[in-house]
Image (cartoon, rainbow, N blue to C red):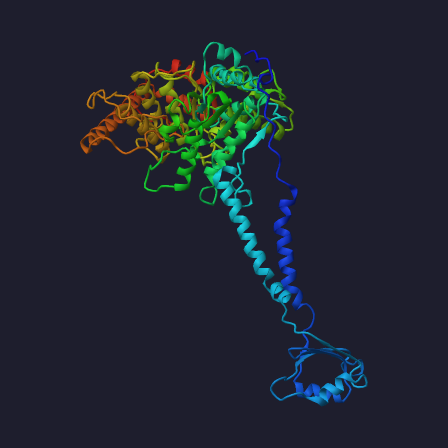
Length: 635
């Protein structure tokens, strides 16, 4: 896709200047208040406290000439210090008993005589207005601080977005001058998705040609799809391609501990976007704040207030302002219908799992910078990775490179890619000595049954590889790779898939006469497929062409998750039909393997000897195998 030429904003509409940052002195208010309060509270307590002396004792000390300094106030308070030859200048306090015992002329005469007290002074009362105010200063500082916080919070609630200590400000990351290097060239495939997103960017950069045709820019673009398909990568590419300010935030970034903060942040975000218009707002994981209101047993008022404010902002701004909202989610079925209506998210873009050609292109992008051996075929790897997302493919290439480094190589081989694929799908390989010989034979018979039923059924996908090396929780693996991308599945193909899934258990019944716990995962997968055939696909003659599937995409897996919408009688019919389909599939697999008992024994021996065989070996044994007489094979 040829990138659109970049151009600046329209010349007849200069961009508004960025809002000035808050003054630097504001951040020092709280530390200065704390320091002043601590000093005022702790300063009077610093040092040792003066000694409290009884007046009679003080009179005796004055007469004995032990006092060096003495200060007498009008209200009778006495403070002073002792002489160095008595107590080394220690301080004392006392009180002159005026108005009770009359005037003590002897005491007053002695304190005024330098022979008794070298330094004497008489002052006014200490209970002045200034002292009283200083005693209340810490309380006044605390009250003033909380009044300031309250005013800032009210200003944020009225739309300023400041709030207490800035909690109401939007936490969106603004991409303007320093743009990311990601472009649409880094997003392989998805040409239709990139075209829809590029039109929005192009409208903001050159809206004259759209206005000439009478076209109005969409107010919102919602990208929905399974996890890992590149929705956030597309948003980063938009930020790299667009020459307009780009505001990026996650849905959880609006929600805070305090009530009302989410709505305040929404207001602040849209106010900043309007100031810098034309601009783009990107909200990742919008389902964090956009879920249906009032759904479920619990109601989150804070989240609903945030959603209501978002709805009002998207519906309230003029399209001519040039603000477009982009969002991404992998749970579109949980979003509120009011958020998805035209006028808010006008354009909904589905970002599905990549097709086989797109997987090959994605692998080529992630293979850049890696040294690949000539035996690496990215087309074959793309064909062997159906259902992989873009993130899975990136992880596949990285795991393959790690495998090469583990073997002291700098080049990635096809075997490295195969091992990395097994690691992603199955888990860490346990080694050939993980199982005892008796259990290894059981696993070989089980996997041979899967492989032969697939090889002998024309409607089944071709077998690519069979192994009895344990990986993760699987004791053995039979891999099937479709010859081409398939989007529709016939009833014959689904019925054959049931037989292939039950082929391992059928082989155990044919060879050992009994099943084992090794078929537990096969039974669970087959039961799930048969249930969907009956309940969703209408492939049951007893139930008829009735489908009880989900109306919304379930990108997180699990099928329909809502309440049951049919009766108990219908559930009994579904259970009966599922059991019938599974029994018929098992009977089909048992009959097929009984007719080709020789091929089953031959493939089992190959697996015991080599542990891993290719699909070509499986098909060769299936073609050469002759129907055998019923009997038990050699041990």
